Image 1 (cartoon, rainbow, N blue to C red):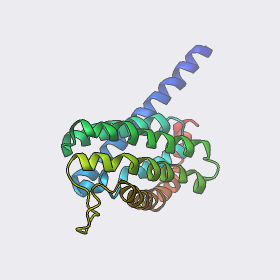
Image 2 (cartoon, rainbow, N blue to C red; image 1 turned 180 degrees about the vertical axis):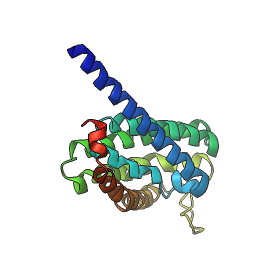
Image 3 (tube, one colour; image 1 turned 90 degrees about the horizontal axis):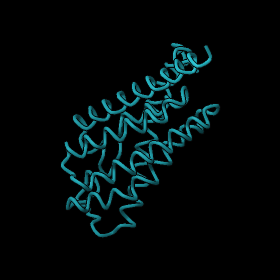
Image 4 (cartoon, rainbow, N blue to C red; image 1 turned 120 degrees about the vertical axis):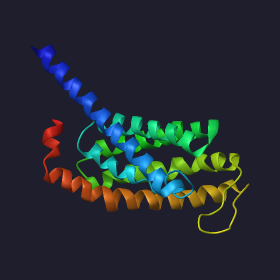
Amino acid sequence: MKRKASSGARSRYVAQAGLIAALYAAATLITIMFLQTLAWGPVQFRISEALCVMALLTPAAVPGLTIGCAIANLAAMVLTGTGALGLLDVVFGSLATFLGALWCWKMRSRPAVALLGPVMANAVIVPAYLPILLQGLGYYTIPFTTISLDGLYIYMYLFGLVATGIGEAVVVYVLGRPLAAALKRFKIEEMLGR
């Protein structure tokens, strides 16, 4: 009987991770369709990152968000034409999501601090490879300006650190926090079997 309960718990965990992965990937692809480079360019504003709050509710969010990010970044690689350079985003973008979600789960008892995980991981990691990816495509200008940062890696990194950090913080705190509150109000935690 113990084995059956363990199998059921494992199945629920896998199902939760799969659902979260699908939600994250779909939300990212929708963002790419409507906000285009704001989902993957020099300014990061991925609506799907609001789903990082799921890591406050279930450990299944950690692999779910990571897999969802990898799927979304693979699709973005095809949709945006980044080619093999897009693999940087698949690997390191997914790593940032994994580390942020893991921090969020570990610090779940303090939600305001927990949500710093995705903000910090993305702010530090994404700008480290994004200039390489964008220069490989032949451009890197500060969005909404004509200021080019081509060849100035440290400035590109610093711009990305600030821009990605702000974008991530807005999404996670302005959209994600109310989402977390709504999920708690509707007792999603109990349905997730935590």
